[in-house]
Length: 69
Image 1 (tube, one colour):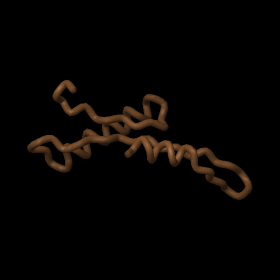
Image 2 (spheres, helix red, strand yellow):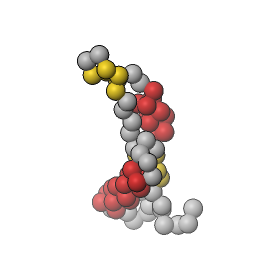
Image 3 (cartoon, one colour):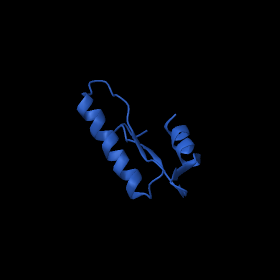
Image 4 (cartoon, helix red, strand yellow):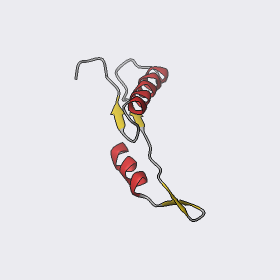
């Protein structure tokens, strides 16, 4: 779903006045693991977001769950 949103934003036509403006998004994604606090999930998603930005932006990165998957 996040990848579909990313592509939709990238393909949308945005304008500022008469100028076309390229807009992209990066996503950090994490799920809940048994026993997680909301803060732990947010921290993993935030880390994944910064990984996406470092890797060149305009991408989705799923956080490592710590289970080697």
